[in-house]
Image 1 (cartoon, rainbow, N blue to C red):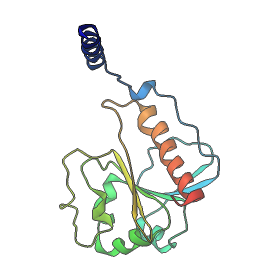
Image 2 (image 1 turned 30 degrees about the vertical axis):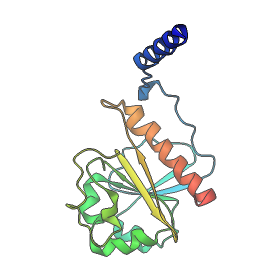
Image 3 (image 1 turned 135 degrees about the vertical axis):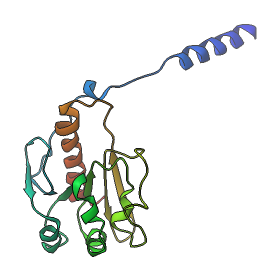
Length: 178
């Protein structure tokens, strides 16, 4: 009995003393999407070019007027959050048929972009959010995604790997409407 107790305690201490730490730069780069995607971008596009992805840079007014299914996804850069949080775009974000991602959103809940009751100031979360947050509003739910980056992220982690992960979500959504 004492031997079993000793083994259990020893294994518990051993397991408690071990931790797995995965650095973003040690992760394998995700594969690019397998189907062609058109991703609209509001603001300067910092992301690397990847296979099967075409970036279309435009202003939010033109993108919103293009229709709810005109693209496979939308990226909005941090410097355009104030414009995107305006009342005139809330219905667009609630009816768009593709995922919308906000780059540099670690200080903000993205509900401010589709909930008429919230302002940009209401959504402040002081750096606790994902670097890139996204959503799509469907008939039955609000599907959300978030991508964190490691502290002191490399250019590959912040641009190449991140856009590939975002594009993968957009591809999965286009295929399956998850």
